[in-house]
Image (cartoon, rainbow, N blue to C red; front, side):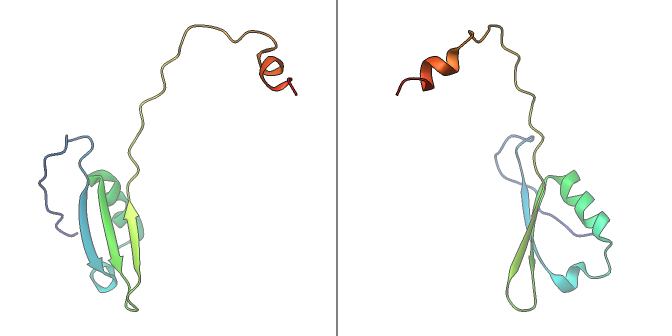
Length: 85
């Protein structure tokens, strides 16, 4: 579809490429294809509209699940903290 330059010194999993395109350059491309490529390439695409405004399309990185911690919350903890008045 379009060429997104590679480079930089960020680790591969956090590296995001940035491309600026005009609306004319994207015309004729199915929206699904554009979004899939942004997600697959982990990229940021800024689309320049004819009136000068910009729209940014950015893939959201997948976050690792939070660790499950051992322990417990004592009964009445909330009343002990917020019950004072």
